[in-house]
Amino acid sequence: MEKNHTNPDSSAVRTALWRALHVQIDAKPPILADEIGLKLIDPTDEWQQRPDMKFTKRLRASVVARSRFIEDLIIEQSTEGTSQYVILGAGLDTFAFRRPDIASKLQIYEIDQPDTLTWKQQRLIEIGFEIPQYLHFVPVNFEVSSWWKQLLKAGFDTSKPTVIVSTGVTLYLTKEAIIASLKEMAGLASGSKLAMAFYLPIELLDEEDKSMQEIAEKGARASGTPFVSFFGQDDIITMSKNAGFKHSRTISTKDMEQLYFSGRTDNLAPASGEVFLLATT
Image (cartoon, rainbow, N blue to C red):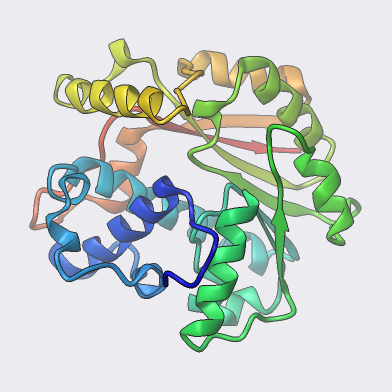
């Protein structure tokens, strides 16, 4: 892979490897079966021994539950007639290739940094995937460009109901930037759904997750992409309503546990801290 001049975002790689690790080492059946990202990354044989793989079981569970929750949402909305799916911060998402039965009925727009999307496209072609016509890569340098304007340029139809999802993004944005994005999304066609992940401040986390959060925050600062925004659940609902969404509710870690982890034999459980806003226009 040295011949590629671009590299994917390290957090996109990490989450894709977590999804594959779940399939390989956690109890069956998997909450989500996704190993295409592993094929894209093609890591060394020792990849499972990386510290960010070995000591992050609860974070792995969170990522898998998040991916499954979003997948269930888009499948449900597709059966109800939604025909557009926007993924903000798509990373190494593989839904378009794992679920062509659903994806082929949609127009899918993957929005992310140019380097990540360029690398992903190259790798998909290298390992034998054809890029389907319904999949649109929308490269955006979020610091200087409007993702909304780039989405419209890519052919997005504002008159059609849409599912728009955003995970792992709000951490890095100011409250003002998040509110501006929410206002744009609230203007989508009536009946559109937003699923956006927010993150609780460290004092609201379960005790066992606080040290991992401290390590993550330190690493983010050191890499030049510090965590900026944390919110309580009431704040999230207030921002959503003020932005103009008709209906808003939050999906907590406890909700995720009930949805996907009850009855498991491996004690797999998600880390506290990630809260989904599920809002309707």
